Each structure stands twice: as structure tokens, then as C-alpha cells.
Image (cartoon, rainbow, N blue to C red; front, side):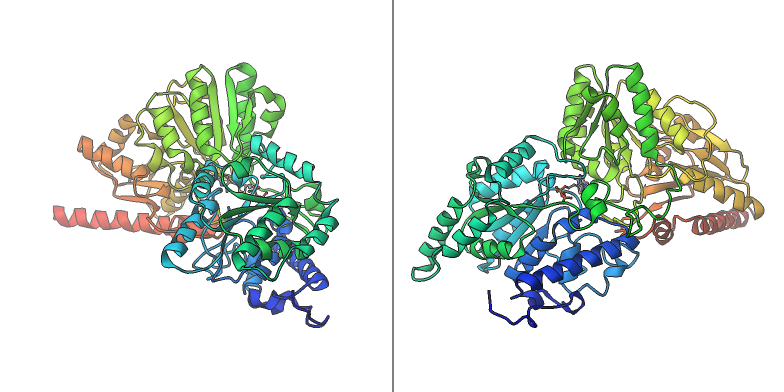
Length: 639
Ligand SMILES: Cc1ncc(C[n+]2csc(CCOP(=O)(O)OP(=O)(O)O)c2C)c(N)n1
């Protein structure tokens, strides 16, 4: 480390334009900057909401990475990417930081389009090692010499893709570094056998107690007087002797170092500087504390994993939740089912709280399964359970179920096994942006043999569907948004699964809406009545199968009709209706409303719907105009 004066050893965060500005900082200078970063994180996230605890835990590690590596030439890939705020602050985005997660503002995840320092877009877990290995192969083929680093949490390391990548990396012996950021937590406490192994490593080293000893030893490592190769090899062995011997990573062909204290920036810099020159794949195990430096988050890291705006002083949310969450209904209904039926089991992939299963876990621990971030495994395990007579409910965020496409098709649908998949956070999710919207499920589920797909219009229908799904002898999915409808359409009857319901009458046409769009359709109807148009509203709660009886009835009315969905138009609900109309040679919808094949980024759900033309005002105008245009054309034809 260069010798610099006290004055040179200070930089304000607002003056950091690029990582070059922090190179050479040491001791107090690094600590002061870390404090300022924490202050900025807490202040900004208290206003914007976002992923706080993971970022508070990775401040020193990110400082050390940018002190040692030369980005953007060197590449750092953040797994999930929810912990990339500190990286953003150090790579020239301080001034824009207050726009975090807002429409048109900084993304809460790394984005190549946002900065040359963001090496790879992330959002879903367990992609970093694969992406890094791809970049390492490209470097080797291109004959360049950049360093490639994947930063992955102990939770994301649980994901199946990580294991596939580790196996390939160990076999290829490519130069790259994996930093295992181990805070013993995913969103909740981490689960799984690997997590147990990491605890063993932690306790066998007692890294905090012998930290000073390690510092002394590392400063004695030989630095000069040999060829670079033997120096580095010697360095590697000498380094390795300072650490715990690990069986797991070593057996995969990786050089394991650690565990080390992830909050001692100077020590991290020393290790990274040495490790940078070791050839072959290296894994550095770093211990961090989730929520570090903010008492409410230290006490309750799971609640500060992802937060809505909060009061900085107390940590309490500033806005009382207005809408009831659908996950509450799901959790309560599954508890009711489990109480009555001992074959009902619930599965989550590391999202117990978010999916509403905490109560179930407490009341029925032997029938609750948290598999960690392992959606593919969860789906096939559910199929195995169903094959043996259990009634599995896999409750998962819509976007993460995408991971399990083949498992749902190959293991549940082709064998017609009654796996029940409850898709939470369906439709737009808001501030997390494009990696997290749940917009593709009808498309990837409805063509699967035996699969049935339902979308309730309100909380009551959601409960009704879950209760009925207990008797299903086929695989099914039920999709619902995070919040219960603020204006519930109050579905009136208790129809069997697969039946649509006409909720409002109308002579001038029909709004055939699904899920969250049903209440929107009712509001549009109310407005259009004032313009002299009376539209009927049908709740198209079954996407697969369609209710063909009702569809034929709507088509036979001779009045224009429209489909409305908060889902991608290609292969969505409207497409299903069009296909069926074509097959039966009946009148088609005049227009299908939904989402184009585009990337919808971040914003509030209201802003996103407006941008997509799915807001009430736009729909009302477009529907009224389409009906008038059709009437004019019909009149022209008859005259
Ligand atoms: C495939 C997938 N499933 C679930 C999630 C939701 N998720 C986001 S972060 C997270 C926990 C990650 O834990 P870890 O990797 O240890 O990072 P930490 O937040 O503890 O730093 C989960 C489950 C996700 N992003 N991707």
C-alpha cells in the first residue's frame, strides 16, 4: 500500500468519481469512507425502499474489491445484484443515487445499460459463477488479461446453477475468483447441508480471534527475489497454510482460502492483492454481518432484506400497509387445509415470509419444506410428493418459478401429477424492475399437457380456488398479484374451477378480463356507462382451460369484445382466446389488451401500467374509440 499523508488518506463519498479515487486509501481513510457509505445507504433506502441489509453487510468488501481490481477492465459480477448499491456509489453514481429504484432512475440491480462498471445484469440468484466463467473463457480466447470476479452470497450458492458452474469451473481450471460472501442468511437464516458445512469452516477457524496472527503471518510471506511463477505458487501454498483446509471446494478443484473477516478492509485488500495472481479457480470465503452498522437491521436482518420506506431513527415503516397482501390469504388458507387434511404440505424456495408461509411453518413444521434458493428442485420434489399421495403446494414468486419450467413440464405435467403451484407477485412488481415482474406464466404454462392455470379476480376467489385445488387430480397453477384488489369485484358465486362468471351485464360489448384486470374492467365499465356505452364484464378466471361455453356465448352476442390481462400478449390469455375462436370459427375479440414483447423496467405499479397502456384512462379511451370505429365501419357496410 502506498504511503500517503493523512490529508491524502481522506475522500468524501461525493468526490468519488470512479474507483481510481479510492486506490491507496488505508486504515482511517477507508473506515471514514465506509461510515459515509453506510450513512448514505440508510438515508437513501429509508426514502426509496430497497435492499438494505445485504448492502450494509458488503461495504468493506466492495471497498476492498475496488481498491484492488481495476474496473471496468476487470469484471465484478454480483450474484442476484441486490447488494450492488455500494458498487454503484463507488463507480460514479453518487449524484443519481437518490433516484434508486424510481421510474427512470438508477436500477436496484446491476445494469450494463446503466454503467460500464456493471459487468453483467443480475436479479435472479445463482447466475454469477456461470457468467463469470463465460467471461473468463472469452478472455482466454481473446488473449486479454482482465481479472474476473464473481461475488456470491451463501444463499445464492445454494441454487442448482451454482453447482453446475462450480463443477465446470473446477474441471476447466480457468483463472477466476469467487468471493463467497457468507452472512449465514439468505432472506431468512440460510438452510441446507452446504450452509452447515460453511458453519463448520467458520467455527474451525475462529477467524476473528486469530485475525491479528494472520496479519502478522501474511506480512512475512516472501515477496521479492524469485520468478513470478514460483513466487505466486509459493504465495499460494503459504497463504493456504494460514487457512482452514476445506474438503468440499477443494474436491471440486478450487483453491479455497478463508474464512476471513469481511469487515476488515485493509486485511481484505491484502488478501485480494495476493490472491489476484494465483492461477486457477480460487474461492475466498469472507464472513460478513447482514445489516452491519444499523441497529434495527442488525437486530432483524430478515426484515431489512427488502424494505419499503422507513423512519431512519426507529426503522419503522413510514406508510402503514394499505392493501392486504394476498400472501396472507394464501398462508391462512393453507393452514386451514393442513388442519383438515394431513396430506397437505407446503414448499418454499427461501421465501417463507414473502409467500405467507411463516405461520404454516410454525404450526405444521413436519409438513413445511424450505429448500433454499432451489426452485427447480422444489418443483420436482413436489412431483415426487404428489406421486406418493401427498398434496404439495409450492408457493413461489411468479418470476422465480420460471427457473422450474422443465421440472414442471417433465416431472409434474407429463406424469399428470397434482402439484399445486401458487404464483405470488404476478403481474408488475414495481420497483424491482424487469428481472422481477411476473409476466410470462400463462405463456410458459398453458401449453403443458394436463396443466391448468387459474387467476382469481379477488381475495375471496383466491381462497375459493385454493380450497378447491385440494381435490385436483392434475397439476395446476394459481397466479395472483402481491396486493389484494383495492376495489374487489366481489365474485359472487362459488363456481367450480374452470368456469368464468359474468359479473356485470351489458348490451354494447364485453370486457373479458383476467386476474387483476377484472376490477379495472369494472371501473372502466362504470365510466363508459356515463358515455352511453354499456359493457358487460366477464371474469375470465380460468386461462387453461378456457370456459368455452361462455366464450361461445360472448362471441355469439355479435357485439365487440375485448380481452384484458396483466401479462405478455404473446402466448397470453388473449392469444388463448384467439386460438380457440380460430379453432371454433367464432367471432374474435376486437382487441386484446396486455403487454407487448418489450422490457418494462422499474417504477410504481401505477406508473408501469400507464407506460404499458394498461391504466384505466388509456383503456377507457381505446375501448370507446374501438367500439365507435367498428360501429362506423358496420354502418358504412350496411349503407
Ligand atoms: C432464483 C431466485 N430465487 C429467489 C430469489 C429471491 N432472493 C433475492 S436475494 C435472496 C437471498 C440471497 O441470499 P444471499 O445470496 O446469501 O445474499 P444476502 O442477501 O444474504 O447477501 C433471495 C432468496 C432470487 N433473487 N432469485
